[in-house]
Image (tube, rainbow, N blue to C red):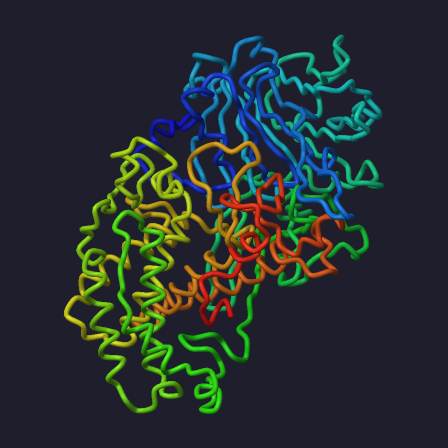
Length: 608
């Protein structure tokens, strides 16, 4: 249903990340497996492993190719970027035969990749290029161990400067200027007879690094940082209000000149001693859909970021309760009574819709426990809880007609319907790891409410087992877990989740419903609170606040938003937000009330 490609055999026995920015590099379809390569966006670069020559690690500075939809009354419905081969780190030995691409390790921030002459294998390092692909990397880099480097482009090249040993400045016919750094400064490169490739004169051992020059940037802006290479990065949660991104680096300049690495706008806001767009000497490039990126320099190899708590943190109830006059004027108690007395049902065929119903009914019980609504009478609450507990028996026992199952290829909890129907699209793609944070967030949040209201319920032990399993599927913090990947959906670099799973997408991973994303981490925080698990509560709280910052920065647009093109901002919400495209739409409707409404559900204290 969803073939895996380009992954080392020993990784296939481990949990494989399903919702990462680099997913297009390992995801394909049976129809496209030998022909189509989709890009992945590390930002500021888009990267591709081409299946047609020129082969190697292909890079594109996406912002150059931005396209806006036709304007209607001064507003555009979408914008996106074409992918072009600006530069490909290749080798003469690849010739016209596709090399073997192999992801052989991954971190929270990216992957390590080998590109080897076809049939030679990783055991022969002299036949391979080795690259690290990392969120925010300033350079596109690869290490050679004997192959003959070629840097190929779709565009004619002009060599502007080669006066500094190991450094070449190349201008492309598309007006981009790239700087090439070679760790072996004795190597000789020149533009070959094609006019569109910078080729080495002989086999080479060392690292070659490329970076596009910023607008109005001098040719020397990268010089101090060329000898520090980022190899990966992991998140470290410091406290309820602080986390760090710890970069794995190598090279002689890491402790002296430091690592140059690009930060996104929401990171610059909360990073200690951040370089901003206004800082003297700032190196600024543009991401595809998340605005300007500013180069940060660190000699410690780590960024520390803070997400302070508000004075009134959201809990089960809103910060303010309705007054007795308001309760009386709007007939809140009688409406609540009617809703609880109505017929409650679940659709046994959908984990998503059932979860929505469960949280809705649990929220009625939460209101029935609110003395500002019902006074001291607990009759309505007892009735509500009894109905709720009866209703979810099939969840607690996992006996819906389409039960959840553990999938062993990527390793996670999915609907069994994907196997009985042989269709990746059923249940919104849950079976191929779409939308788990949306679907399971309802079950987690509703269960936290139930545990708060009736902690001694006879079915609580089984309920807890189900909830902990769903939490582990979506937001497992343990990189050593043999059964689930770490933080399946949430990107600690982007600050929000990706909803799309293991099928390829031409515009990269995406997220549509920010409010359902928020709902999961809200539920996680509440579950930690009611189970008296401080670590889970703190982690959920931190992820919730980081998520909220990213949502405000990228998804919900006030009139002064500078992240997106000014012609797109009047839409006020991004709609479907891809790595390569912002599309004022939904997956299910073009109606404006749907495009905006999907950012509002479910109604809860956190989304109020």
